[in-house]
Structures are given as C-alpha cells and as structure tokens.
Length: 570
Image (cartoon, rainbow, N blue to C red):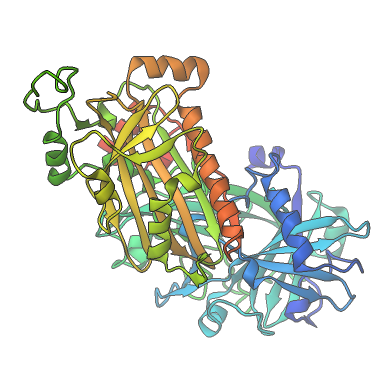
C-alpha cells in the first residue's frame, strides 16, 4: 500500500465538525462563492463545447449524458447561483442501491453536474456523487433532496479527482471533505485521523438469457487493511444472475483521511462505535450501503480497453438465419454472358454469401460504438414520433443521416428480386443493400429487423456480392434506438475484420478502410445531432468507442468463456 501512496499527489481530509442543520441547498457552499448570475440557456452551449474538447473527451465523466430537460437553477444562502443537471449513465446504464438485508434493488441518485461561474465570470463544472446509507434509501428511494439525508456526498472535477463534499447524518453535516496534503499537520492538530481508501470494483455476470451485465460497487476500507471482497451478485440476488466471474479493479483507489474528535467514532457506522467497519463493504453486513452501477449489456466504464464489454458478443456471434442464407443462394449469378445475345447461365451456389468475421484475414478486429442521446423523440410533420416510428424513419432515410460523399445506401438493383419493396416494408429482413463506397463498393443484407416499445432497429451483415465481389470488411453492424434514463439513445455498434490481404495492407499503411468507416459513423452522429436539434429534441453526441484488439485474443477469450473486458488494447 505504501507503493500505491507514493504516486498519489492529492489526498482528501474528512474533518468531523459540530453537527449543524444542513439542507440540500447548502451542499456546495464551501466550494462555491460568487455573485455572478447564471442561466440554463447560457450554460448548455458552454457544456457542449467543454465536453467536445479533445482534452475533455476521454475524462471520467465524458460519456455521461446531460438530462437538460431536468436542469434547474439554484441559489445558495450566500447568493451564489448554479445550474444543476442530472447525468444519466451512458448507453443505457442505471444506478441502483441493493439493500444487503432484503436484496431489493432501489433506484439510486443520479450523478449531478454542478455548473457555476467563478469570481471572474468563467464557467466551472463539478460532478456530485451521493452514496446514501441503506436505511435512508429504503425510506427515500431515488433521493429527492430530503432534509434528513444520511450518507456520503463527494464532489469531483471533470477528470475524476475528489475536490470536496460532506458526510451527512439525518440531514446534518457531521463531516467535511476538503483537498489537502497527506498528513496535514493542521488536520492532525484538530482531530484523531485515520487513513482510508475508496475503490470502485466491477464484475461481469450472465443471466438466464445469456446476456452479460457489468456490475460495479464502491468499497471504503482503512489503509493497511486489504480491500474487502463482497459477495458476487449471483450470491446476493440468486434469481438475477446464473453466474459471475471475478471482481476486478475499475478505478482508484482514492486516498483520503477521516479525522475525528474521538478515536472510537466510525463515520460509516456512527451509531455502533463498538463494531467499527474495518473494512466497510457495501455488499456485506446489515445496514451497509450497497451502491451498484449496472450496465445493461451496452457499455462498461472500465477495463483494459475503454468501454469494451461483452455487448459485442452479439455482433461477433451473430449468424444469419436459414431463410437469409436461402435468399442469397437463389439470387441470380453474375456473368458477362448472361445478358444481350448470350443465354443466361444457371445459378451457381455461393456466388452470394455472408462474409463471416471468423473467415476474414485482418489481424485486428474493429469493435466500435457511435451513440447520440436525445432527451425526447423528434417531431416530424407536426407530430412527435414513437420510438418505432423514429427507428423506421432513420432506416428509410438513412442517406439523410450520413455524409454520402463517404458512402450511400440503396436497395440492390441487380439481384433479380424486389429489394426496394422489401427494404421499404415493415419487415425488412432479407433485403440486400448496395453501399456505394468510393473506390470499393460493397453489399450487406438485413439479417434482423425488430420493433418494440423499449427498443427498435435492424442488423446488417456484410456479404460477398456476385457483382461487386467482397465487402471491404467482414462482420455485423446493428442500428438501434432504445429508451434510457432521461430520454432515448440512438447507436450503431459494429464488429468486423478486414476481408482480404489487400484491405489489411491498406489499413496498416494508409488507415483504410477502418478510418473511412469511422468517418462515416461520426458523420452519422453529426447528422443525427443536426436533425434532432431542428425537430424538437435536445441531443448530445457521446464520445465514440473504438477498440481494435487482436482477433486471436478475442477468439481465445470467447473459447475460454472469458469476458471481453479482460482483453488488452492493440
């Protein structure tokens, strides 16, 4: 642990002070002091520019979604105004509290962005994390700012360093968090101090539908002790998960000091000093807080490759149905002699076929995700669309949502079947689409098309086309719109490898075709953003996820039934 602390450049001191009444509006008073007015309308454009900057795009909170329709302006007793905006977990994640006694899952407080102006009139941003105690959570699910709040409150900067906060007991501040240097002599003069650590850990679990979820929790433990190993989620809630792998470090630990006037006082168990929490584990012991962050098969925060989770198993393992394969087998064979004066040749199987990701030659596998959050669905022709209607609108107007100088999509005109009619129907599975890629056209087939109340979308698989031959990459890409906390998410997620050695060489030397594809899907994010802003919705572009691990590493993990989150990045 000494080695760990050697490279820590900051520390948090939690000073326990005399109990004083404290309401929700006093949460930020120690950190904010300015009489500069602020409004939501001027704050939103600044936040969007701030998050998009290269230096901020990969910070700890850059992939969280601002729920602007719930933004409010608040004022502290010292007349300082600030804007508070809830932050939804990226890509459909959700935060819940698990009661360690009843095992019940209760909605947890969302992270909150706190934006204010300093004395110079410049915008500043902080992120508030609330970790309520289990007993309080049972009485106040979701936390709405009740005056009797009991639990921890931490304020982070955008990079993920703690800059302040408080410890609350029944609505009163019993401790204050402030940055300082390790072993501060002033702190040690005031109180009896102990060193503590806060650490985030996560684990991959599988349910009975073979869907993988990443589950995380926060641990607090004393310096000099080993971090506790909490129960695995399938042990805490046996009906939810069939199996889980092993806990992994997901962030931290962050080092801080807890300074008390009494060495027997335990800030995490103040009512029972004879039974100190050493260590404190959110998933063990009665009355302990259990804050879980669940990521529902979409995205995890941590791992050797940022954002790489088992959600890409769907694309990697996806197989075309027999009906789709039969469709390709019956398509007309291309021959320069099958038109005009020459007779048609009989169909030769395998002239049209799905290109398997496992049969491609690329050393690397591209695993990407490009997402746009929207606070509401758009208004088209004077009416707000349903989730299904918008998914269909995007599919049928796909060229309006991409830069067509990079690629354009059209029903294939040479299959001998009515691809335009199938693509334009309510069930497009089996439609063959020609993609006009400058210098290297390719085709795909719709292998899945679904509509539902909570999600809708479709799946493309690349194919060998008798007319244009191989698609440059072999793999699968999904397009989906689904409901998430505070709004809706559009995303496209793909898994593919370079089809042949020519493409492999082009990628290694020129960045083609992966970089071309990245540009196409980034253009889709931008076009989607532009469409939503002009059709009654407030969107936010999420930072793209682009990982390219080695295919051999991916295949080995799949064969050994290991989580993709364990893979090293290329």
